[in-house]
Length: 123
Image (cartoon, rainbow, N blue to C red; front, side):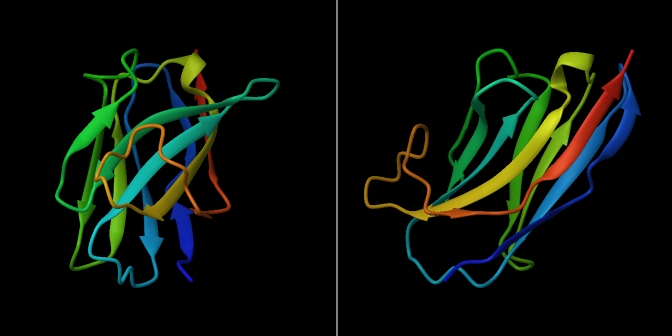
């Protein structure tokens, strides 16, 4: 059972930066995916960025260039660096993980989810 705990959310002014983290209990799968998703009030869940166990990353087209996903295998921690934040980035951000055979993480079916961390961007 993989447990995920997000941290680092908060309030920031538009144009600012924030890095959120996701601490994962030991992932023993040889091949796995991890990702960041977000959900704003009244909206559906949106896939933000994913990264595979071999380090291949994918991003939502609208966020590429502003957001960067990374993982520290030694610390079992996933990160999302968010730059030039906009009020429309305001959402609850969730970390997710799943085992994979294909290594293709975008639109994968994620089995494990964290509780989320709130990011609020004010104008």
